[in-house]
Amino acid sequence: MTKRKFFIDTDTASDDAVALLMALETPDVEVLGVSIVSGNMPIEQGSINARYTIELCKKDTPVYVGHDKPMVKKREHADWFHGPDGMGNMNYPNPKVKDNSSDYKEILNDLINQYPNEITLVTLGPLTNIGQFVLDYPESYQKIKEIFIMGGASTTVGNVTPAAEYNIWCDPEAAEIVFQSGHPDITMIGWELCRGGANLTESEMDFVYSFETTKGDFAIDCNKHALDSSQNWLGDPGLGLPDPVAMAVALNKKVINKASRHHVKIVLDGPARGMTIVDELNVGESEPHIDENWSHTSKNINVIWEIDDQEWKETLYQTLKN
Ligand SMILES: [Ca+2]
Image (tube, rainbow, N blue to C red; front, side, top):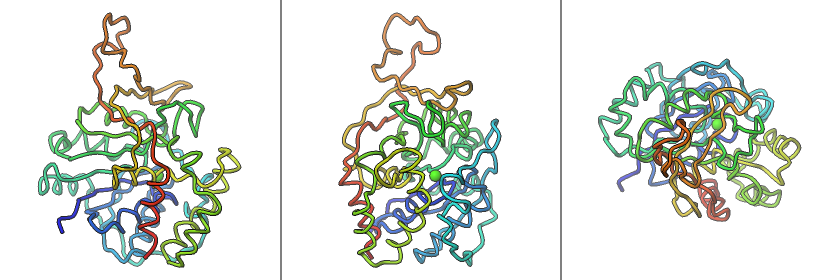
């Protein structure tokens, strides 16, 4: 079987861990490497969480530690959401394997040259690592097959400010570099897609426990703190899993119900910092151009508007059953 080749960039906390697990446990996918970025967690803890997840899946995927802070803005972690260790304080043991000391950018560059136009890049954290890769290896970057970004909110509802989703807000300068990079196949999976009917309900979490698998238990247990935040802080009915929803879209196109291509810009500063402005009506392409910021803009991002909640959950369950 020819496997699809994935590279994953993550600020590994609990929902990242489940997304990693999904990719690692999809039979026709090979995860070539995982890079860690500062975000939800400091990179040291993110690396520990990623390596623990990889060991749980009995894989030896290398983990590379990337940038320990955003390009311009100061560090802001999200341990208040995921628990101090990012994994619901489950006291998981330390992983046995250390992180790989190679530079993630050199590794990713080598992999792209080895497999041009074959690698799917999935980003689950702030875009610092990938923004820097765009700057350092612009030609190689364009030979990534497709890029799936968990970040932003196409409907502007924010989870860290009224305007912004955490990943984009955390490093808006890096996000803008990636969004304006000219890569022809970038898909944005906004956090709003994991809300409401895409939440895992209490009975769906019980269903996962009924698999009686280590992976199933792990997927729900490590998100206990996030469940509390999801319900009591964001007012969602159950457990929101933004990174796994993004991974489900990358793994299984049938998860996508509605998508269209638009120009998307990132707001860098002010009260709308990190907002992903989607030109939903493509007004930037029409005459007359009355605002220089939106003159002659072209469609740079595949925006997902709606997912099939049942298909996403099935995609998740398939990876937790064995
Ligand atoms: Ca994440």
